Image 1 (cartoon, rainbow, N blue to C red):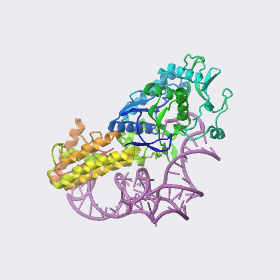
Image 2 (cartoon, chains in turn blue, brown):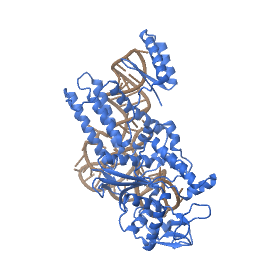
Image 3 (tube, rainbow, N blue to C red):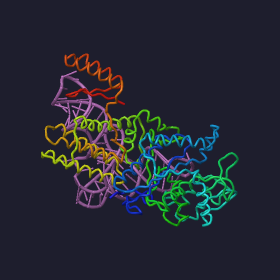
Image 4 (cartoon, rainbow, N blue to C red):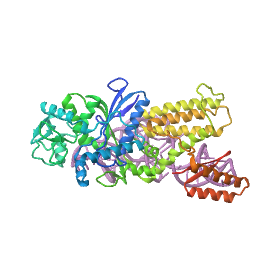
Length: 475
RNA sequence: GGCGGCGUAGCCAAGGGGCCUAAGGCAGGGGAUUGCAAAUCCCCCAUCCCCGGUUCAAAUCCGGGCGCCGCCUCCA
């Protein structure tokens, strides 16, 4: 039974979707005014993982992730660069999809864009005005915060708390300084649409409520995003959505912890960020995914080269084993019974580990716990192979299959590494290693070792095993 | 100032009253194996921020400190 920590209640709750077997899942997507940075990638990766894990557990998942392609940040940046806002948004939306793919994040089922939903947004705002939750003032429409009695329930604050914070700018057009814009008037040259209140564009929070409800329904199961969105973004989404329908907007609110750099939040405004696409030049996607999944998604996490290198070594360890099984030519035959006691024990141990993995993951998507189980599987399989010498070695392939299966929700251990790549590089390596092995035959160790050192300098690591010498590029 | 969170080995990180004589990964030390390496296996490396309390029993619950972080303004 999967349990999730719900930000709305602060409790660990049993996950029960509204409709048996089907999950409606919304996760906040990017505002496409720039490339996204590696910190922005955390919710993309982590909630992609949760989505896959739900599927792994047999749920049908409908997943929506929006693209905010209309927003002040886009307009401002476009002005600065002297391009059309639409053009800028398109460029970065394309880059967003490219980068997601490179990170191994699967495309959402629905990827609505704000510019495609303006009409729906206008209708939505009209409905809010009709119900008395919003009012027009000089071509703009504001949400009347005091009218929604649950306001603050997600972030755990009251309107009075917020007042005393007093960092809210005073705007004479608002009835209350905490009221927020649903619709803004556009000035000359800014993107604008017709509306009952004149030409304008949507405000800052409305698009998520509208697109979530339009694609998934009035009440959705899971709404996820970074914890810095809790207030005001998600709080305002709840206000809009629930005051319009009178129904609960999202059953479970999930928030990921932030990525930090030297103890500080990575953010565009602090300038301490690195684009995801640049990190991908140094580390492969599984290393980056491992880096994220090795910490629980709700916890803060430090970004550092050391942490990424550790992640790369850890991922390597798993591939070493997968490679070992493959090189040994072992294949799992499901209907073949183990013959030895060692084999029987190992086989049932693997079954146990599979269950332990799910137990761990069921505890609020505890990926570090799940990974721990995978590494135990790796260790036990290596040991089983080391002991060797029996008829049941094919069971190591069972373990390898399990490792790949359990890695799937995390998008880990899915590649074919250490495989020959063909081409001239492959042929040259064969030539060099062949000559080196001739030297080894003649026990000319100095020269053989010199070749190994030189290759290492080139980033090629070689391994002399009994029958043959293997090589691979070390990243 | 208000609201929320966190503090477990050299580093990263699970665990959240007894199975903890505290998973797992990285790094390090010792050993096995190896021509030497690599890989692999075995062993070693933590009284769980501090002080009080509750309990037969606390890393885990309660109270009080200290430290760090996030949100309250655009931010994943």
